[in-house]
Amino acid sequence: MEAISKNFFLYLSNNKLLDRLAKRFGTRFGADKIVGGETFSQAIPLIQQLNQEGLQVTVDHLGEFVNCESEAKERAQECIHTIQSIAQYQLQSEVSLKLTSLGLDISRELVYENMENILQEAEKHGVTVTIDMEDSSRCEATLEIYKTMKAKYSNLGTVIQSYLYRSCGDLDELDSYDPYLRLVKGAYKESGKVAFPEKKMVDDNLKQMIEKNLLNGNYTAIASHDDAIIEFTKNLVKKHNIPTDRYEFQMLYGMRNQTQADLVKEGYNVRVYLPYGEDWYGYFMRRLAERPANIAFALKGIFSK
Ligand code: FDA
Image 1: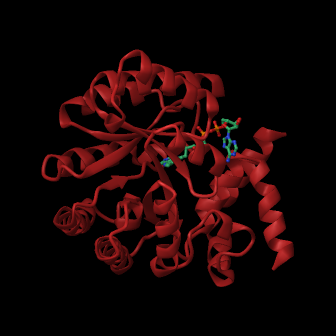
Image 2 (image 1 turned 45 degrees about the horizontal axis):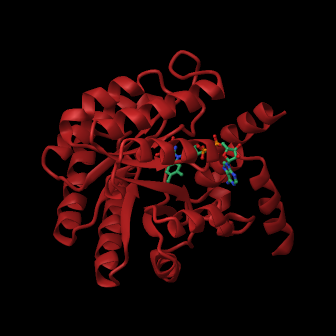
């Protein structure tokens, strides 16, 4: 049953008609519980609140399916505006972005141009930028762009997904770039040709990757809501005496709020991934696919508005 519901919501996440409809309705249907608003201005008080609670933030201007050059440039501009606002309001926040929103499906040159503009501004204000990882067909291009830009800009991170067979090799390949890496299980629908079919294999691979990356001395963001992964990391850093400034826990906004607060109380660095924007639909559907319990608050959202 869980597999059927997962596939159903992942299928819906790619439905462009529903995506267009969703934009008309705004962040209703429970999306406002996990999305920080439709504009960055709406997200600012939330970020300030999270910062006061001892949580760092990374903001993501939601957007997928960008296939025209002017829109990709607008997305880059929004990102630059977000970086300037982070500096202006002195928010403890980084920025996350998706390369398809900057034109990855249009041309590589366009992505490089947009990334240059964004990273120059980010460097000016000391803001770190992390490139999210999308589906496996874009992984190679994303890593190539990451490596090229990382050679020029130090304040750049990316994401490696433990469900892909290739990922441990990617960690080795990235080791010489002094990478800032967020390690996740992976959120897209992938075939058994490229990804582990069993959840246990994905979980075990994530543990192996966390150990490898931390022991390689690379900054590691452990992005998971899974208690087993969090416990594994706590034991690992204790065993190897790894200082807290070499890693952080990351969770999505609205998920496991108590666990986030508990980790802060225990002295760990915790960062909340806060998405905002009108394009909340694909993100929201992937969260429903991950966790059937999320459907309950989506239904509550529909009937309470
Ligand atoms: P998983 O879904 O495997 O659940 C394991 C257990 O954790 C559950 O059985 C439950 O006990 C507990 N749990 C999980 N979610 C919970 C919740 N909401 N409330 C209570 N308990 C919960 N993916 C991607 O492909 N590319 C990317 O760039 C990113 N970026 C990213 C950033 C950040 C900050 C996070 C946290 C995640 C991502 N992801 C991602 C998503 C990631 O790949 C993955 O799909 C989700 O985090 C779900 O996997 P988990 O490890 O969190 O738990």
